[in-house]
Every structure is written in C-alpha cells, then in structure tokens.
Length: 85
Image (cartoon, rainbow, N blue to C red; front, side):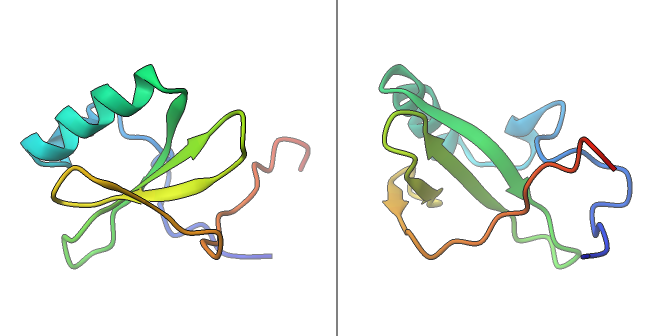
C-alpha cells in the first residue's frame, strides 16, 4: 500500500486552472471535445505540476505539456481508486 501524498487533496483540484497555464487550459478544452478526461494533476511540493489525461474509449493516458500538447505515454503509473477500504 502506498501512502497518500496528497494529504487530503483529491486527484483533481477544485480549480484546475490555478495549477495549469493558459496553453494547457486551451488544450484541455479542445481535448475534452475528443473524449479525453482530466484524471489528475500531480502537485509536488516543488511547484511543478503534471497534468494527466485519459481517453475513455482507447484507455490511453497522456501528459498535457506546458505547451498545451498531449503526449500519450503507456508507461505512466497511476493509483487505482481505493473506494472499498
């Protein structure tokens, strides 16, 4: 079992736009139209966030870069929801 490093914070912040730049906000808006969903914004203590998205149909996971471009990476590790603990 992994310790939850979010310290009570959910995987998606209430205001995601506070953690991503304008190009990422635009990219997020466009990608949602093509079936991509925001699954989490990793927010390490150093201040550099990583925005992860998932395509519901193909089950692909990608990182939304600072330039607003999605880079699909099948090796990304994400935690599964622990609803039944």
